[in-house]
Length: 155
Image (spheres, rainbow, N blue to C red):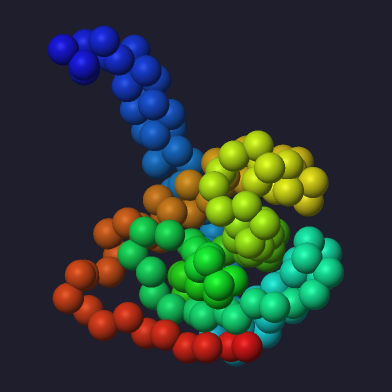
């Protein structure tokens, strides 16, 4: 059985998840208006694209997303989950840099990690911190599949 074969790995991951659930209870969500969030995103996208790409060719959309903080299309459109407004600024910055690195490399391979590490050498710690916010906010269960997503373009 595959479960028996990977039982130790499953139990380790489960234990870490239980600890993260407990830690997430102490997370403070940041309160900022939609306008404040939009202005912050504009500023951070502009800074990140200029640092990584030398120019800002990105179109940015903020909308409700069911399972992600951000995504990047092959054409360079960055979509940011409206729930990211509750994240601290350093995590919003990280998810934006992460997506802009996808403009250079679509896959999570060595080239992508090199880009990410250049700007966030502590990215593994930030990914763990993001998980705490995902748990706190309920990112994976917050939106009903039948609800219409709210979308707005900020570029």
